[in-house]
View 1 (cartoon, helix red, strand yellow):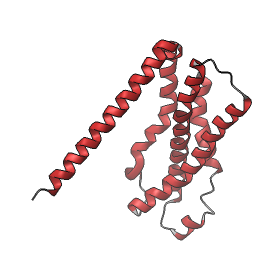
View 2 (cartoon, helix red, strand yellow; view 1 turned 90 degrees about the vertical axis):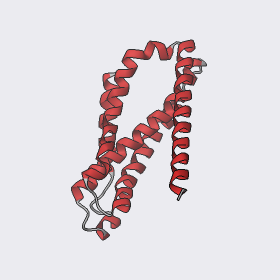
View 3 (cartoon, helix red, strand yellow; view 1 turned 120 degrees about the vertical axis):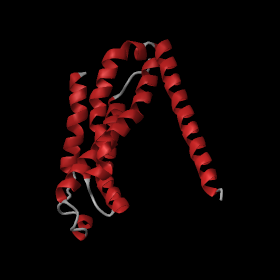
View 4 (spheres, one colour; view 1 turned 90 degrees about the horizontal axis):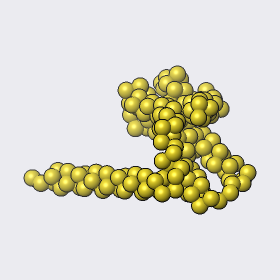
Length: 172
């Protein structure tokens, strides 16, 4: 688990290193952008993309485990490749989107999302504590269904709240 936690920190950094920001035509045209902040947000994007892929693959791996289906090298390669591809894509997109949204790059604009770097180690600690519940088919399936139900209810509540706010904004 320690290797997994370290990997969730190291892999996004390595993905970010592979993204060339100095010779990028877009950043050359926007020369007022701070090259150090572009690099920092590139690493942040790599972490976001890698963690999104990680969270996308996890339910499939758990379902495969619950159904006692074997794995193949091709499934493992596909899962790893997805993390690398999404990490690379997000590493390029995050600084670009922040620049387009704010016409500048400052830590204040996207700094809150650096908490993503801690997601891997936090998930590692979570799994260390609760792996026995998640890997038991009955309790694991119930835990996953409860988590999905909570996500659905929270998103519905937020959508309703936004809808009510929109109606209130329309009133004279």
